Image (cartoon, rainbow, N blue to C red; front, top):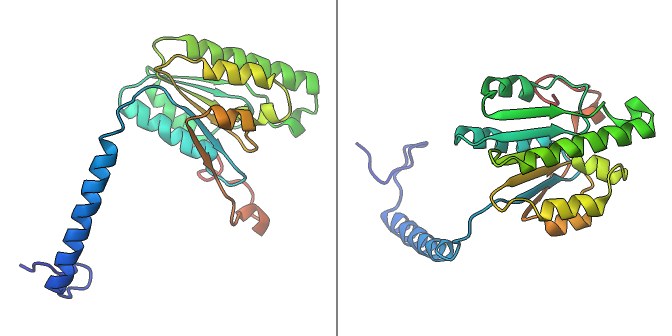
Length: 213
């Protein structure tokens, strides 16, 4: 049986190099343990996924799946993608006893071409989101594409930000969509910006099942 060897290549590792590595990692572990010992607070987080890159909603639904795996109850409100039959929704239907999905949007704004209708849909979705936030049985609420309706001023920004800042202390809230407002970013505990480097759309590919929806 080989010891101190590189498993991938089968090449023996220099014992001195291995010892230096072990010493370096031990110092890193000690430093990290010291930092982690200062992190004692728990509670609900306000999380924002924004940016021009793909993956904002996908990452949020990943968190939803993680929460479900821990037995948590989750509420999902889709503010925009109402006309899309997403793969996530089909999978999450298997957890009907833990998740409530409210698809309130009527599609993208260029689909409806009706400002009053878009504003009414946004308000209805926001009321559903507040209802889920107020439910003590719900541990996490995903507000998918809320940033889009805020960008187009379909909802009063101040009202939304104040409501999110004053959410239940034990409730996690995830907000997705590009062009997140600075006020929302300031209020959030965790903000991730997805950066677009390449996109298949610019190479002639249309939206595909399993990738975009």
